[in-house]
Image (cartoon, rainbow over the protein chains, first blue to last red):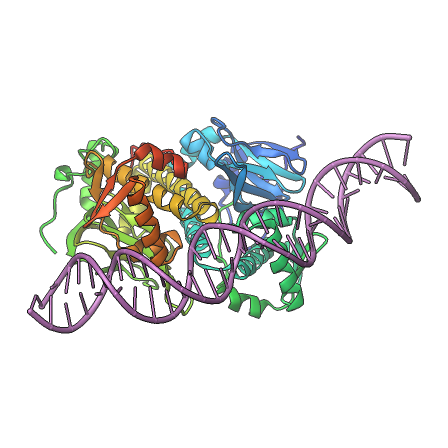
Length: 245
Length: 245
DNA sequence: CGCATTTTTGAAGCGGATCAATTAAAGTGG
DNA sequence: CCACTTTAATTGATCCGCTTCAAAAATGCG
């Protein structure tokens, strides 16, 4: 836990991707803000089964949202959480979480006073509409991923993931020309894409072979964006602006 | 198009599953209501790429929400839409739809004046919170389905789908003791579960063989609920109450 | 009743899983 | 900073679940 960053000084908010705030909104959100915490890589931020729980905004670092299934310790990674993404709505609204969130790198988060979310709705209904808007956008992204898991093969899934993550990072100002940080292991990719660790390794080798993309010591390099997009039927991510709490 | 059913006379609203309305809410929603339309089986209600578009509540009948992928005419069915479910939010909020909705049986829908959704938010912020709540519930269901597609085999997927649909119908008062209407064809099941038509047929035959469940001329019969639930790791659907527009 | 669509079933092939052995990388303590 | 231990990535061999294709049976429908 360290000193809170004032919302007006938030490095994320300056990015065009995020929705600008009116003065009184900024004030209100500043009041919702509770603390700023730092967690180590691998630390759990939210644990499935947790009751209540806070609302968070990931401030920096990466995390994964996932579920464990059955008794066989099978894991499905549902999303990669990037800076600016919102966490804990399920716990707050439904009282109980069915997924867990784990930090992938060391990370820091803004902790928000959940109790005030309903007040925010009442006092800033247009903000409620913005929240609704990004929930609908997320739902669309869920639709996309269900289609991917249901209908695309291993290489297509991998290509889609690479491009989507790259573009999401780019929107946040965290991507290079054709490279970005990429702290996901083979096992993570497998658990995200519904594949085995071994097969992920083979697909990755094939991508290197065909000079499409490669992962090198925690960095993703996209060599042939067009070819990857074509392979996966990738059409870009939602343009924003997105609300930031 | 036929005469509108007044909201107070809506057969769905009497079900405990749906959130009761305060007097002024009922009035407001009655004002949002625009028309009541009837569509034939196979008719498209929403077409991908559509701009604008109305908000709907499915009043009776079944529909599917789906996407077409690639050039190969592959289809992913994203959801089975049942009476009381809400449609068209994506079109209304984001301006453009990426999925389509097709009636599975002859069906009727309430058409809502979308323009008023923001007013509803302003005048009934608690209603906005209810909407938020079911969006979070739906997101959880999406998480579940992503886990299912990513990690479960054909028989488990089928078992899960049967139980989920049965329970959703039950909440709406549309299920029998251990049977319910089931107008999905083998192709629909395949497109929903990420399988081939042929394999669906084999899994179904296996279910009959093992006396777990069967589909007989448009009716689903669940013989061994416990065994199916155990097979799929099924744990029931969200209890409600759910908002109904 | 006859045509069209859907379902069923069989045979063959393939994508990806699994298992196991090998290599590489990343921590860890001295 | 190095040897040791642990963890993760690679690779090969084999297996299995599911797909594909094609034909036959069943079902629906005008």
